[in-house]
Image 1: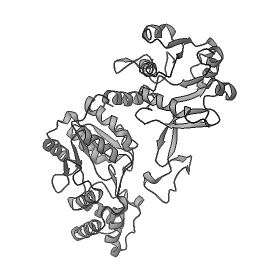
Image 2 (image 1 turned 60 degrees about the horizontal axis):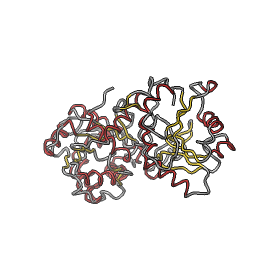
Image 3 (image 1 turned 90 degrees about the vertical axis):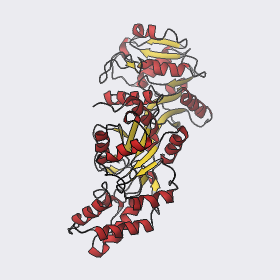
Image 4 (image 1 turned 180 degrees about the vertical axis):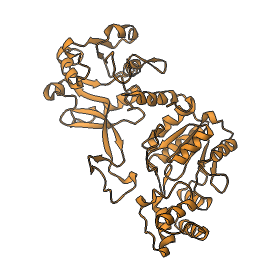
Length: 435
């Protein structure tokens, strides 16, 4: 733990939700019975001493003068600690960082048990599992750009999150590093693995920390691109409807410029892109809807983590509503196929109220749910969702795994539905974050 910090001044000692940031990790480790000593390698011994007086396991280790370079790597520090402190660091070692304040004692204990139960592995490190499209330079890592499979079908990629390492003095001495030759990867949920590097990370972590004690008054969801991936069915129905004009067939990736404002606008955008007139599209829209209804839900799937999130909110008694620009004629059969007809307290479509980006749909939902704006949250994937939430005065979470064609700058975002739960609580408890 360093006293100074480049991007967030004095972050390790700075108050974080009521107490110094470093206390969060120290208190978590103090609660792990398997850990016998907590060695804090620091250049701020005197500043830390009054902050840790009540933590009996803590041993303050003054950082040697030749290791004060702020950019020194953790392996170098660990090698010296193992050499100088054989009594405390002579066996197994859990290496943690003060900048990961949300790691729970239970997770640390699970990691210790996992490594103890895996004799073939000499060390362990925390990972965040990502299912998204990754590139290394210009080359795709885990997908074929010409075949845009749903993200939930992509090969997962593990990101070393620096939240948690388990190693031993022997590994450090023989390899010179904290990750040994046969490491075990241990998945840490994104909400616990947050690492505070810059100001945005600090705000994100505070949102989650505050949200652990809050609960939303209501959660409003967009449907397509937020809860479900319906593009395969939409693309097929549109392709069939406009085939007689010589347009299509459309792949899933072709649909991005067309969607977001309902069926009529989608058909008009497809016609315009194909050089066709965009007036008098009523019959064409009706044909699209009929084709979509006939095979609604055939290839539509909830995004990973959505079912578990809905189960959790239902169990907690949090009111939920769908606010979608998808017409009722296509929304109703899709929900029926998914078994979601009775999943939500309210479903609003453009048939019922003015669509997004107008705030009217959101305000109507809150009125019918008898929920205050101050405790509500909207989750969506497009600018229309963001604009509607801003106009309604309620917090917004951008589902960046959805259908937006460009980043929604400045929004609180999640890369997967698994990350939503703590953010929903946090935004409901704290309100919309500032810039």
